[in-house]
Structure formats: structure tokens, C-alpha cells
Length: 180
Ligand SMILES: Cc1cc2nc3c(=O)[nH]c(=O)nc-3n(C[C@H](O)[C@H](O)[C@H](O)COP(=O)(O)O)c2cc1C
Image (cartoon, rainbow, N blue to C red; front, side, top):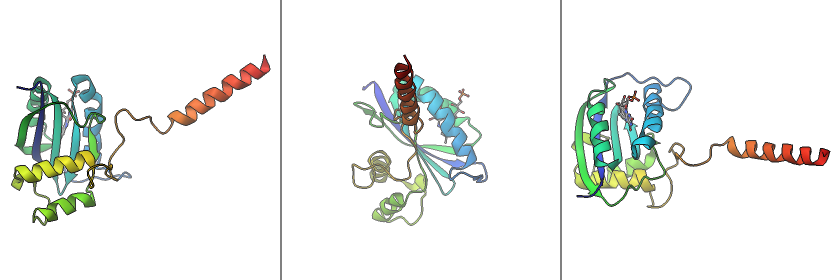
């Protein structure tokens, strides 16, 4: 069996939606913060989709790390009725850039649902083809290559403050050099 596995599950949020000033629910934002902190050191990557009060999460990484997190996840009071939709060996993680890619209620997901004759997002009713289509969409975007517009930042991409900070650093060095 492959060292790497992919696990996809569905669950129901137990919390009432709370948006605050952000477009991301406060509880979901907390989950993403924990995921982005923990997943890289466990070798895990993946994506989280949250819509209609349901979570749809895809996790990829070493089988043992997935087991450990999945056990932890099942006793997390922020969701319930955790249902495994898919678990399979993979050659290597394909969300490699993402500690946990967050995809909010994207219009592209509605297109996938329509393609499979679904009117609402209910991951408990998903069979293998729609699970695969959802995972592909979360990973690649609607045309199989582009990023979903609503995704959060990749784990390894430079933050927006990095370039201005670098430019300021270079300017200081030039200034000091000119003063010598
Ligand atoms: C829907 C959902 C998805 C989650 N995904 C992750 C995840 O990818 N990685 C993670 O470390 N924790 C995730 N969590 C949180 C875990 O259940 C748990 O709270 C966390 O791993 C504990 O981390 P800590 O021991 O560092 O406090 C998720 C929780 C929920 C409700």
C-alpha cells in the first residue's frame, strides 16, 4: 500500500453561523488557523469546503498522520456525524502547496452539483464520481487548471507584505551605502 493516502469526509457544523467582519465564519477561520499551524509539521495538505452548514474536507498525507488527525477530528465538538466518503492510496499529495486550502461557497461548486443533478450541497449523498469531481474542483479549479477565485492563500506563497518589506530593506541598504 502507498505511503500516502487521501481521505475525504463530510460532517455537519454544530455552531450557528457567525460572520463578524470577515467573509469567513469565525469558527471556520479558527479551524483554518489550527490546520495551517498543525498540518505542515504532520506532512498533511488538503482543502476544506464549508457550505449549507456542511463541511467537506479532503486530507492528503502519510496514512498514520491522517489516522491521528481523523481520530482527533471525530471528537471535535464543532461538528458531528463525520462520514468517510473516500479513503484511498495516492502516489503523492496533489494539494502540495496548501496546508489547508479554504474554498467558500464557490459558484463553480454549484456547476458541479448541477452536472450531477443535485440542487443543493449535501455531501452525505455524494457517491464516488461526485466526490472525485469535488476534489478535482477544489484542487484545480473549474477548468482543470485555474485557481478557484474564492480560495485562501497558499501555504508557501509569499504574503502580501513581503515585497514591500524587501523593497524597504533594499532602499535602506542603498541609503547606508550612499552615506559611506
Ligand atoms: C471541520 C474541521 C476540520 C478540521 N481540520 C483540521 C486540520 O486539517 N488539521 C488540524 O490540525 N486540525 C483540524 N481541525 C481541528 C481538530 O479537530 C483539532 O481541534 C486540532 O487538530 C487540535 O489541535 P491542537 O492539538 O494543536 O490544539 C478541524 C476541525 C474541524 C471541525
